[in-house]
Image (cartoon, rainbow, N blue to C red; front, side, top):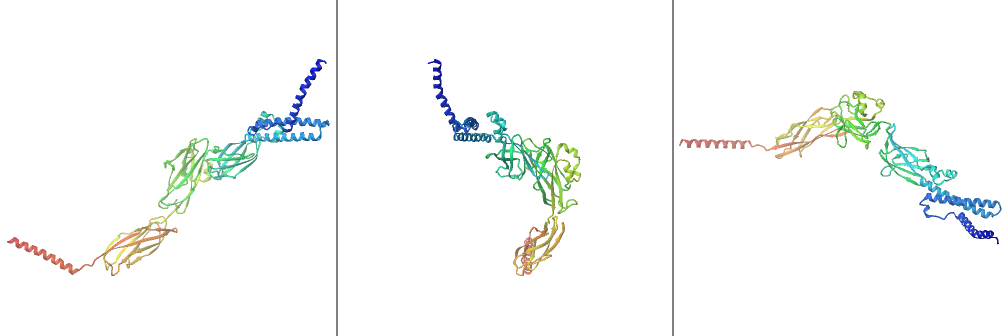
Length: 506
């Protein structure tokens, strides 16, 4: 035999089994794909590469089976089996691809800006971005076909739900929950929430994709483009009695990137009303204050003191509107002597400074004062006590229906003139005459009479100080006995004198 033919025969005898084994392995891989690796669920990118390799291998086998079927070398059943294997491999590949895409999805809060709207409401403006990386990163890592990759939209995150929470995880934004239908890579979305609770730190709750959630806690930025201090007061309108004081609590928030030192001023408040600003913590008086880098919110208090009596500018029941201004230090000199001017709200708004409108309503209240020149009397059993008291209105409003009540001892008679005073104007007084008569069988001793007074002022009950009158009943005097006692004392003295004279003559 020819040696060359002999070598060819030996080579074919060796190669043929190997080719058959490889062909069988290829068919098995084409039918079942690569064997499952439990780490594919943990390392999704490596699992995607394995699924891609299996998909490409089954696709090649399916193309070869179609070619063989076109040449009538395989049956319809073999072609259907190859097509089914290809469909399974394609689904596995797409599932792995989706797992990588969903795992890589990330919604970032790029900006959280707090600002105040024209109607005074606090708002938060959010800027959200899809920072998943888009299609370029995945294509570079695993070289995925553009058509299939684009069909799955890896650069789009669907159904992003956003809400604002406080530290107790309660929703404090309106709307309660906002939805972004599609968040595309490279195209940020903007959301605006009205704050139902005024906070500087909020939690932005984000749910997206297949249930992925994030809840970063964020310190809100301030809209520095406004360049002013926003002022708010919960007690913007108060009723205060004349002669009393009131405190307006102020909350100051800095919305400026240029100035951090400001001056507090009050305009349109009558000069008869004393006022000053103070720090609620230290109670130190304030005229200027400064924000620090770490503090953009401060508290202050405005204290006002009303005069004791009404004036031309401070009338009872009259509303006094005024403004608290927060002026940047460099603008103070530009405004000049602004305290002497009567400012309108439109003029203040043109200054582009922080302000808040407050209201003060002066109220009056009557004050019932009872003056008694004498509260102690000493009488005989058959005598009466006559006294008077003066009723004075020391308040700032008229007193109505002043009633004098007397609680005498048992069986004592009393007279009150007058018993009721219909009205008593401010600083006026009225005299009331009182008479107390003991019974005929009154015993010797001390007795007390209680005098009470009450009235009304603007529908409110007003009581005066109670007065207590002490009356002492003296015992009856025996005139003859007293005279006899005096004569006996005189006789005794004369007898001693006469006796002494006689002794001296001896």
